[in-house]
Length: 348
Ligand code: ADP
Image (tube, rainbow, N blue to C red):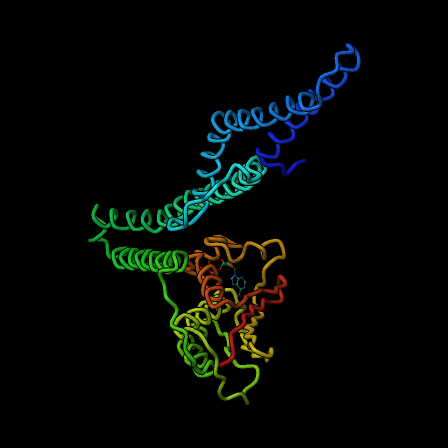
């Protein structure tokens, strides 16, 4: 019954009426005693059926079906790709059932679409709020130092050099934030095309370790490979982006590591992939922060992170890069013991 087409419906209605007419005519001949010829008893319902069928079909087509067809076609064309063939709909189709299905389907899609738009709108609003908040601090600091210098501090030997130096540090911080924001926006809009090639991970990681040696020395932290026997390891990826991942993770291990501590790089075979783990024995991160750690501007200890010159975007960038490679990243950490950040890369 559910999947009846309008034609079927007209057929059943006129058929039932004609049958009832047949029964009435038959009963009349019996009760009134007037013997009607058999061709009259059969002919009148038959004519009633034919006329009724065409009349009802025409009325249905004119007043209901054509209008529903327009709705059906509109919904269908909205869903279909632009260059799709126009939809052919016949009165013999189960159009009411189709319209119901299409409308339910369409409503679901529209609801999902609206939810997606709402969440991206929220994301945009939050992002603008976060960005202006992050930019405010260094700008206000610079304003403070520079205005003090302009207002006479320039001639005060006790502060002039140190205020200029502090203003320049804030300018560096501003530059770092803008640079990281640019990277994030490129990664989020997919404008950044990855240059996937085969490269030697060990060699690249050694270069990063060397470049951070001075920074690590300042905090008396050693950067080492867990297994020194591994000399080369060919992987597939965007070398410069992966270099950025290793740099960001190692820089964090120095910033949040314990003085006199060690950060080690471990490499593990996982069939098609390799797992790279960077382990420090620094301050660690409490369990409740771990799920949000890779969000942009998320910091565990806000003042400490800012003191260390962090932009709060390092881990968000790392996650974007690894996910753009269709690989995964995870973190394990215990407060006071240390943290391990692990990510995978495809073997070449
Ligand atoms: P930031 O620029 O603040 O370092 P990140 O995105 O790189 O931003 O890191 C986010 C936060 O995660 C940091 O502020 C810090 O609280 C925490 N964090 C990152 N790496 C480590 C680590 N190795 N040990 C302890 N905490 C860490």
